[in-house]
Amino acid sequence: MLAAGAARVDITPPIGIAHAGWGAQTHEDAEGIDMPLTITTLVIESDGNTDPTARIAILDIDTCMLVETYDTAIREAVTEATGISASNQRVSYTHTHSGPIEGLSWIVKGAEMVEPWLRSMGPASASAVEEAITKIVPVRSDTGTGHCEININRRPVSHDGTVFTGRNPGGFVDHEVLVTAIDDLDGNPVATLVNYACHPTIMGPGNKLITPDYPGPVRETVESIVGGTCLFLQGAAGNQGPIDGFTGDTKVYRNLGKQLGLEAARVRLTIDPVPREEKLEEILPSGAELGIYSFKQAGESDDTLGVIDSSASLPIKEMPPESEVQARFDRISANLEDVRHRGGSVEEIKQAAFPAKRETLLLRHTQTFGRGGNKRDIPIQVIRVGNTALVAIPVEPFAEIGTAVKERSPADWTLFSGYSNGYYGYLPMAYAYPEGGYEVGPTAPFEAGAAEQMIEDCLEAIQKLWN
Image 1 (cartoon, helix red, strand yellow):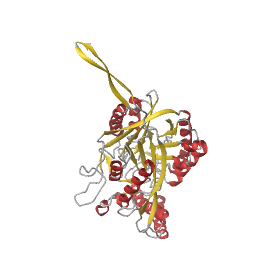
Image 2: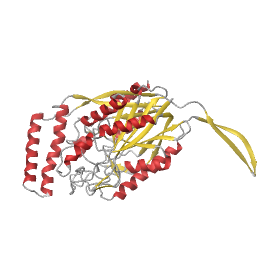
Image 3: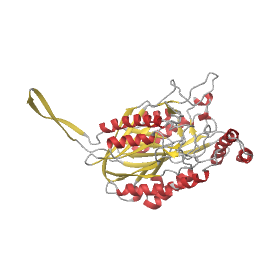
Image 4: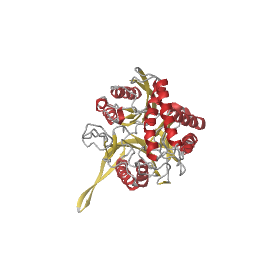
C-alpha cells in the first residue's frame, strides 16, 4: 500500500523586490502582494518502508524558472534534511511571471533582493518536505480527466506574416485537465495533483503586484471544495497561453484560475481510488419499487511506486563561440550601464536592455551546450504512483509533445509536464521553425526534430518503468 503526506510553506518575497517579468513594464519593483507565493510538497512512500532513500518528494514551487544552480541547491537541502535522494525529487515550478525573475534585466531597483530570495528556496523546500513526512498516512490513489478552456494557442500571425504572442484560435491547443486523487483509507483527501498546460501570463506588464498567477486560485479553489492539499503541475505550455492575458487587473487571473479550479474539483469529487462492484441488495416497495444498491470494495487499487531517470539525446543548434558571444554581451551590457549612468529615461534604458536580455539567453546556451552542432542528453524523469505516470522534462515544451505522450503512454493515466528539474529553454515542434516567432529564436537551443525525438524517448522511459 502507498503512504503519503503533504505540506506547504510560504516563500513570498518582500515588497520592493525587483519585479522584472516583462520588458514592456514601466515599474521596477513589486509594490504589493495580491496572493502569497508558496512551495507545496507531496512525499510518497510504500507503506511500511520508511527508508528515506525509497521516498519520493514532489515540489510545486511558485517561481518562473529554476536554472541548475538553484535546482541543485534545493535537492541538496532536501537530501540533507530528510535523506531523500536527489534523483527521487521532482522540483517543479508554476512558471508565474508575477514574481522575481532570475537573470539580467533593465531593472536595478530591488535587484539585490532576488539572489537571497532564490537561495532561500533550499531551506524552505527542506522545511516543507520535513513537514510532509510528519503527515504521512496510508493512502490510495487514482486519476481522472476533465476539460477547461481558459487556454489557447498563443502563436498567431500578423498581417505581414510575423508570428507574435497572442491568441491563435486555429492553432493546436490542449484543454485537458488531469487530476490525481490521493485519499487516506477512510476516503479523506490528502492531496490533489492538477496538471494543465497554460502559460501563467495573465498578469502582464501593467501588474505591479506579486502573484502566483492562475495556479494560486486553482489550488485555493480545489482545497476549499475538496479539502486536503493541492499541487499544481504545469503542463506542456510552450505554445499555450491564457484566453485573456497581459493585464494588470488581478480579477482576471483570479477568475480564470477559479474556473480551472472548479473543473479540477469537479473531477476530483468523481474519483474513488477504491475499486468497487455494484450489488442490488433489495427492491423496496415505496409506491414505486426502489432498487437499493451497495458498492462494495472489489480488490485493491494499484499501489506501485517507482521512479526512473532517463534522457533524450537531442540535436543542438550551431552557435557562435562562447568567447564571441561573451564579448558581444559585454559590449551590450557596458552600453546598458552607460545609459543608466548618464541618467537615461526608462524607455532608453529598456531599449538598451532588450538586446542584453536576448544576448543573455544565447550566452547561457553557449555556456551549457558549447558550439552546438551535436547532441546533448536532456533529462527525463518518470514517477509512477499507482496507475499514473508523472512525466517531467526541464524545458518549455509545445503542447503537441505532451498530448502525443499522453495518448501513447502505456500507463492508465499520464500527467505530462515541462518546467521541472532545471531549465534548458523552449522545445518547439519541427513545423514551428520555418514559421519563426519568440519560441524558436534565442529561447530555443534545439534543432528542428528535437521535440519529435523527445516524444519517443519519454515513451520509452515510461515503458521501462511500467515493465
